[in-house]
Image (cartoon, rainbow, N blue to C red; front, side, top):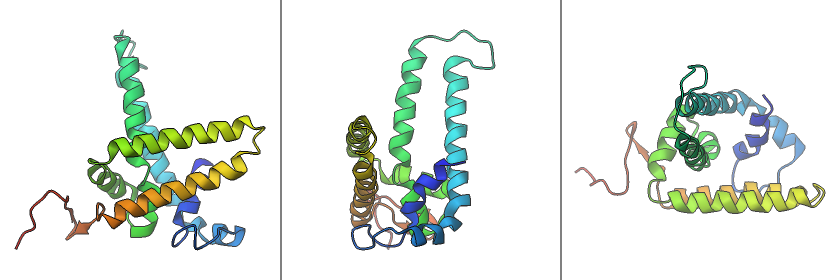
Length: 176
């Protein structure tokens, strides 16, 4: 229930560099909490299904140990797919399911870039936490800024375009 509170800063309007986040603006955007809570529940459901399928949890089935590696890869893949989702939900005013579908399709050409960005941000935040937690005062805002910057670059390339209720990729031919 507290995780959606961490992604509320993504709902603030405009780029973070031009609009500094204040406590007042944070509380003004708490209206996004239910949407982000549903988004988190979808992620939890995904992780639960992965656990059941890959480990046989609750089914009392023996599974192959290689499925633990498959589960790890699918967890990382999911995190990469949903990384721009909170920003997309707030900026385009769409629900979590639509945002996840659009992010999945929009990131098909940039998946490795998103993976390396998340890996770099994870390492930076681990370093920030290792410095008695005080480094997180710098690394967490940097993380918000970097994710938003990447979202804006994806948006500049029109990867999130939604036309007539249907997602169109860059590779599709434009209809006359």
